[in-house]
Image: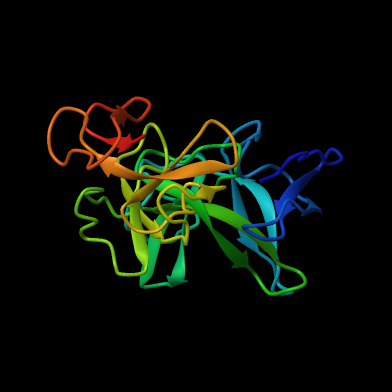
Length: 221
């Protein structure tokens, strides 16, 4: 996460990687996350040298995070998002984000995209939709994924599975193996099996305690 994202006026702190606290202050006309344009919205525009620059463009459209879109001079996505994709035929509205600016429910700030050619380009984090799943059955997550509650306001989703075993320590919500949830107010947490506080499945040992903000999902303590 960005622990001290302070840059001189006229530049923005851009993360160097998804798992890094380091960033680079890059000049631009506005901030993609703060959306501090006097009018219109902040977007990334291509330059003749293969790089990009953050500029204030026309006001945003109405398409929200994850919607299929067509890139145009007037971007069709809501303010804070932009129509981007791996190719012109596969573009969606992606909301810009940082570790301190949460994504809409059902998505996670987890994808780092290179815009433009290095070294003249920029890399920015965007929100990515997370597949909803059932923590009790782990369906429909792939074998190398775990169904976990990754945010209090979002439904359970498939994330890469960790290696933490039941009762073992964990440092992130994705730190435990399939069928387990990392619980604890601060790292390290503990990997606990899922259970239903009001029904099935119940705990084979211990007590089922509801996870914060949940009534159906809990863990065995």
